[in-house]
Structures are given as structure tokens and as C-alpha cells.
Image 1 (cartoon, rainbow, N blue to C red):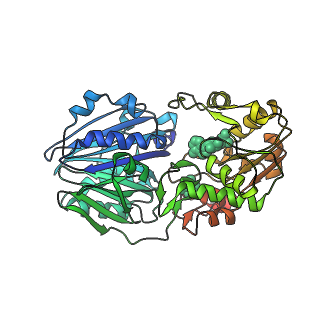
Image 2 (image 1 turned 90 degrees about the horizontal axis):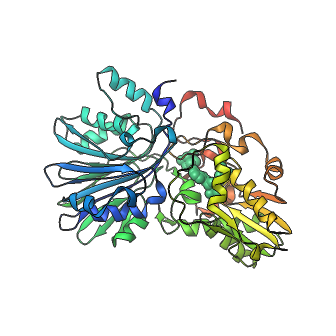
Length: 466
Ligand code: AMP
Ligand code: SF4
């Protein structure tokens, strides 16, 4: 096994960048990353440029653990960009933290990436064949080297030439001494939006980060678009033609913050509609509706309103469970569920309970929660899931586990119902999900195996029937 295979490339990340010479850009980036903390808790980093050089600081842990007031004050500049990263344990190294900052022939450059390239291995081999050496095991360094290879062009042209060779999903921030460039792949799999603060502009993975710094939402970066923010303001070029939009539906289901709006659809509203759709597909005569907090909450409220049954807080989340110090073994996952969530028997005892979660991946959370709710004296426990069964792995940057570990890959719905111990188990249909997403064109590959972007050959759909 080579180092790259060992180092699982799946990453879930958050990006924030701002050009605003009259503001404390590092501090605003810190607040932006703070709002995006849910997108990654492994490492955080900020790079600033004063127009001549780029300085940076990064570390392992939460944004508040990595940065002190002194480090923020030490990062003075006209523009800044930052990154929070989640990764699987194997690749949890400081060298892999972002932004990456390098010297190249034209000066300095820094880069941060959210997504996953499906051809990173091939590109790395090709670059290696020309003598490129690497200091990290992440895709972002491959992209950085590809851009540097086109050094005779201006930076936007070098980025566009690089995009031609990239396959997979990417939202990128690239900072030179005098500008920040934001890029979204032609399918728009990963999010990136533009904000305005006074006369200046910023870029963020989610609109909640714009709200946090008091910026106004301008628009999403379009698929295939390359935007630049600099002294003159905001400039845009279509780097590659737009492909058929395939925005990650899992952002709406689980990953994004409910107060964010992505591609014109508010995440809370989408989740609420998933709950309404569940009520149409699976109305249950129950006494109380519970959510698995937090991602299940808007759907549970939607279901409760549609059914006219009270929504109550029967499951409580410990909000102080910090970063993922829990090693991802099965045993530790079970402990993690109990550390993170507890049931309140006052709400549950003697009642017929509907419990709504956003997804089942391995089945660990659902089994433990059904058991917990039963132990609190529930008369019946019905489990509704606001997405279809996750049968396929994601190759575009969300850690949905290897295919063999996905419970829906091994069992049908009735078998999973028995496995988790619920009286009813219903997954939202693909049609119901699409309706809740208001016709937005999305990727549904982890549910139906229709990968919008080519994936490595050995994982073709015909070999993977679910
Ligand atoms: P599992 O216990 O493996 O079935 O995981 C399902 C639970 O994990 C659900 O409560 C989801 O909210 C949550 N979840 C879904 N996708 C992910 C992900 N990519 N990373 C971490 N947690 C997730
Ligand atoms: Fe999102 Fe699933 Fe598509 Fe991955 S496969 S991008 S998790 S919808």
C-alpha cells in the first residue's frame, strides 16, 4: 500500500478569505472560521498578505485552540484566507494542515482546498516524474504545484489551465501577494459564496460565516467560475464551462449549518421540507416527535407540524464535546454516542415516540439511540430518516465510510430495522428528497451510485449494485 492509499484522502473543510486593507483581516478570518468550525475540527490555519509577503500560522485542533489573541495580532496584512479541516485519523498531521504557503518563481502563494480530487494520484505521479517533491500527502499540494508549473502565465490563467487537468470536487482559495482567487469546480459539488463588507469582498464556504462578520451575501460562486478579489473589487471569469450542476445533497442533509443558504436554498428550509415529505410518506400515529440533534431537528419540526403532533426535546446533545478525540473504532463509536447524546425519560416514558435523524451510515448511532429511548420507557420507537439509504461511498470529499461498512450496503430496510431495534424504519425516498430540495440539481451518488464525475475505474457502479 502506498502512502497515499494509507492516507485516506477524504476531507471535509471550510474556507474563508477576505480582501480589506482597512480592517483587521486575520481577526475577521478567525471569526469566519469560527462560524465554519462544524466543517472541520482537526486543524485550522490563517495566511495573511501585506502586499509583499505572505505570513501564516496553523495548528491542530479547534480554531479557539489554535489561535490566541497574540497570534492574530501578529498576522497583519491587507488580505487573509483561512481553512478548517476534518480528516480521517491516518492523515491527521500538522504538515497536512492548510493553507499551504509556498515560494515559487513569481513570489509567494497560498492555497486552501475543500473537496477531493479523483485523479490526484495520477497527477502526483506525473508531477513526480518531472522531479516535483512533496511535503504533504494532500491533494492541495498537487494543485499548488500544477499552478506553479504555469508560472509564465498570470495567476488567473495558471489557475484556469490547472482546472483543465483536475477531476473531482474542489472549492479553492488561492492567495498571491496582491489578490485572492476563489474557484469552484464545473459541477459545483462543494460550496463557495461571495460576501460584501463595505466596499470590500470576502469568500466563504457557507453564508453563515458572512453573517458572523457582518458581511452581506452577494451570490454563490458559479460552477467553473474563477473570481478574484483585490484592490479594484470583485472580478469574474468563467474558467471552465459549467457542467450539469451536481451540488452535494449531503450538505443540505447533514453537513452544512442550518442558517446557511446554499445555491439559493436555505439549509433549515430544506431540512424542514424533508420532514414534511417524511410525513407524507410515512405518517405515524405517535404521541411525541423527537429529533436526533442537531441535524435532525429541522426535519423533526417539519414532521411534527405536518402531523400535528408535539415536537419535544427528548434527546439532548452535550454541546461541549469538542474535537474528535475519539478514535474511530467501532467500540469507541458506541461510547461516543453516549458521550454526545442522552435521552430524557420525562419526555419519553409511556409514550409512542417518532425519532428523526438525518442519515444512517454504519448504524451505530441509531442502534444506541433506539436502545436508550426504549430504556427510558417508550411504548413504541419509530425511526424516520430524512435521506435515502447511504449505499455508496463518497469520492468527492465527505467521509461516508468505506462501502463495506455502510449498513445499507449489507442489509435491506427490514433487516436494518431489526438491527437497530425500531418498531418502524422509514427512509425518505429519493423523490421526496428531490422535492424537498426544491428542484435544485444535486449529487445523489451516495444514495444511488450515479456518480456525476468519473471515479477511479475499480469502483464502477456495475460492480457495486446496492
Ligand atoms: P452511524 O452511527 O455511522 O450510522 O452515523 C450516523 C450518524 O452520524 C447520524 O446521526 C448523522 O447525523 C451522522 N453523520 C452522517 N454523516 C456523517 C459524516 N460524514 N461524518 C460524521 N457524522 C455523520
Ligand atoms: Fe455529497 Fe454523497 Fe455526492 Fe459525496 S456522493 S458529493 S456525500 S451527495
